Length: 197
Image 1 (tube, rainbow, N blue to C red):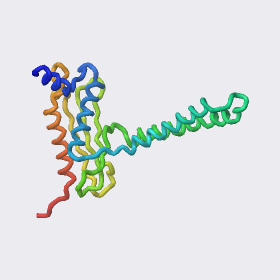
Image 2 (cartoon, one colour):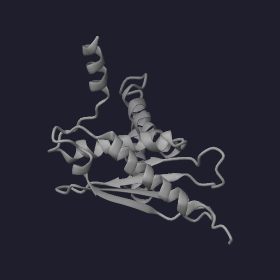
Image 3 (tube, rainbow, N blue to C red):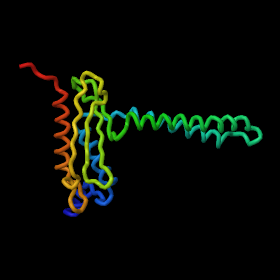
């Protein structure tokens, strides 16, 4: 019975390869996403869906050209049309995807809607950085619409990842959870209207 309990607790443990900064960043980002969602923010997946749709259009053109029902001499005009439109679609749609990544997504790991019952009309953009050859993890919370009147000021947390991981690479979730929740509370304080005295 005790072995089963030990196995179930080991399954919930988040472990990273401490020599791989991508592994560390992935585990921290995943945990941040879980923490923000647990605070009542729902994920906004519209941007991800747009990127998937653009990628699907590019693939569909290639598949139609490849598996068109007629043999080569009969489908010559169709193939020429697909071949001519594919580079255009590929370049244009990939350009749009790169533009979205460069202007909107940047280092974002999570876009959210505002929490239910909140007076603010904007969600959050949560972004993170863990530079190569550095142990400094930077977590930033911004408003999804910085031009909105209800947008809060950006808040940031920078700490060494060594404070959240054991020597074996296990994430000490309690400490990390506490730091991220404090950052969310800081953002919420900035977001609240000032009371008159």
